[in-house]
Image 1 (tube, helix red, strand yellow):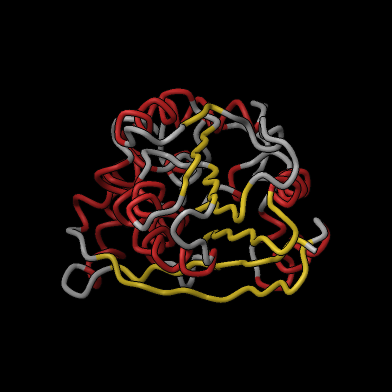
Image 2: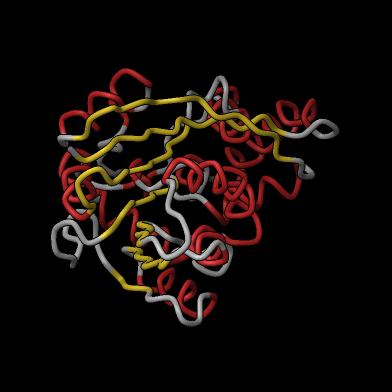
Amino acid sequence: MENFADFERRGWARRSTTYDGGFGAMTAGLHRALLDRAAVGPGGRLLEVGCGTGRLAALAAAGGARVVATDAVLPMAAAAAAALPGTPVLAAVLPGLPFADGVFDAVVGAFVVNHVPDPPAALADLARVVVRGGRVVLSCWDALARNRAQGVFAEAVADADADGPPRARRAPSPFARYGDPDTLTGLLGAAGLVDVRVERADWTHRVDPDDWWYHVLGGTVLTASLIEDRAPADLARIRAAYDRLAAPYAAAGFPVAALVAVGTRR
C-alpha cells in the first residue's frame, strides 16, 4: 500500500502544468472569501500554505498584504514562484514549516488540510506560526451530495460497478474523519485555536461537462485516483455514467460546496 504523503506529492507533481486552468480556476471561486476571513490589511503578514500555482497569493498581494507562499510539491512551488515575482515562495511540508513561532498575522490554506498526512499536527503547526490573536483560515470540500462538481465522479464509479484500479492502492485519506462541521471544529480547537467557527460556502462552476471530465483528471489527485489506471471497459462504463450524471449541469453549472473554518490563536 502506497504511503499517503508520497501518493499525494507524486500525483500533484504530475499535475503541476494541468491544474491551474481547470480545477484551479474552480477553487479560486472561494479565494476572496478566505482572504476576507483572514482580515489581513495592507502591510499585514500573510502565509499561504498549499499555494498551488499562486492564485490566492497573487490576490492577497494585490490587496497589499506581505505574502509568503509555500507548497509541499516542488513543481507547484516553482509554478507559483514564476507567477509571483517579488513574493517569497518556498517548498515546505506541512507539518514542518520552516518559520519561527508567531511570524504571521494570519495563515490561509485553501483545500490543503484535506491533503496532509497528519491533520492534527498540521493544525498545530499552523497555529504555531501566527501571532497571538492571529487567524488560521482553512477550507475543505463539503459532502459529495452537496459538492456536485466532484460528487458526480464518485457516483459514476459506483454506478458503473467498477472495482478499484490495481495501482491505486494506498492508505485512505487521514482527513476523511474530519470532513464535517463538528469534527472540523474539534480539529481546530484541539490545536489550541479559539473562537472557532465553521461555515458552509456554495458557488456555481459553469463549465462544459466534457471539459470538466478532463479538468478533474488533470487537476485532482484523490478524485482522479478513482478513475485512473482502469481497464478500457471499466473506463468506458464510468465515462458513460459520468456523462449521464453531469448532463443536468451542462446549462446551469455544477454546484460546488465547501467548508470554511476560522480559528484564532489564543
